[in-house]
Length: 481
Ligand code: ATP
Ligand code: MG
Ligand code: MG
Ligand code: MG
Image (cartoon, rainbow, N blue to C red; front, side, top):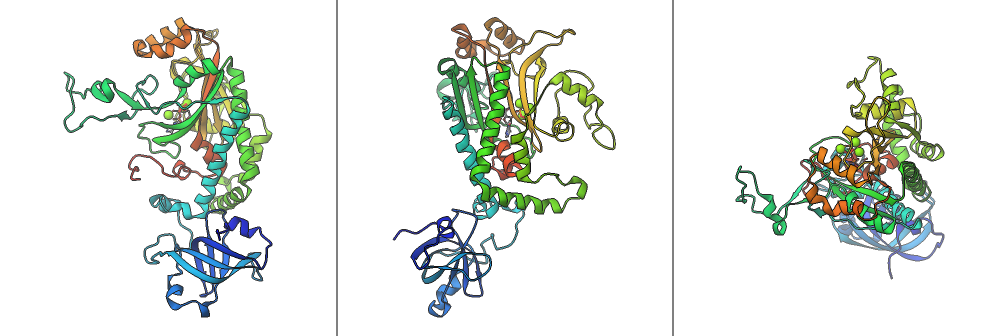
């Protein structure tokens, strides 16, 4: 007989039926009550054992973390806290767990501690909930695009292009680094690598995605991307997943509309399908909030925050309008930002982004038309304004508690302007002919964006450290398994 998953049992009313449960022991109370979880849901099934008929040796082995198989009868529970339980007739241990060594004892563990045992943290309710929400969001992304006729294009992970990621790319090398080939100046000659070509791990699938968009119309890519940024923030990973759609014939406004619709769609999907997980995470967050001073506690709980995001249009304004607001603002008692924006043209720091979203507008914000000098070469140039200032059709979406969640733009489709811009920015044009062909042959206005998947999962789960929303975080000093 195949075992029944606990999620199904907890909803069952087949009292009297013989069932088999397989899972891991969470607790064992009074030599009689086992709480077993099998990962199918956050709840445990209570198994009542007949300890007079269970031998001493088995009883000793019923410890937290051990894997068991239980055969018994499903009965209505008279105890508090559960509706059904299993009256065991036979218990076998599938895998022992040494109680002296198993780190996940039945008590609350800090997230820092759990990060050190990332290989075991899947077994906690918090991470069960987080990764179920992550899974739902990932499914919703694919559903959203496929329902709209977008083609999922798998862009390469190993790439020879380093146009975008100057300085932030991981090299892919098969060279013997103890004895590598050298250039005349002594630096390593990576050109000899990868069958005669220097290669990197991709920082973005965008440029390759554009090639496909100018054939299929609408495409998206959703895969791992890599950045060798040694930044120890709660928002950056060295390996993260990015959702990158590219759309032919889309201008900036269409791009913003699509991004807002996507975000709302996937958040709604999580709310509709992960109510058990989101309720759990909401309560967890509320517990955490209690330890903060009253003034720092958030006004909305997790579910209210997600629903608020669905029910309201994102605020849309230009970089220039945002700078005006920031210059007039008094963010705290000291009445200033740590980093003051003196001049038009400076990049916004996360304190500015968060001020706009959390204090000023109190909702998600889309900022557009950034100064050309602080954005990538491929963004569509606007006409200079009255003061001759150059901006590009960029859009960043900023979320409460997160800061930047999406970065995108309308792309520069005009060949001559693009090439001039690349020259200005010292981008090696001869290496980029494959990309420039899109502008040589049938170029059209087009747009796209990159949504950081972990930042989305952070927002939806209410977690606060990006290391806690990806199963195996890759950060400096963290690549063991
Ligand atoms: P940030 O300003 O936060 O460093 P960015 O502007 O460098 O982000 P983009 O190149 O615009 O990032 O990438 C698109 C999206 O990918 C970002 O909006 C963000 O959601 C996500 N992202 C970027 N870098 C990281 C990272 N190191 N870890 C996780 N997500 C990231
Ligand atoms: Mg960055
Ligand atoms: Mg940025
Ligand atoms: Mg960006």
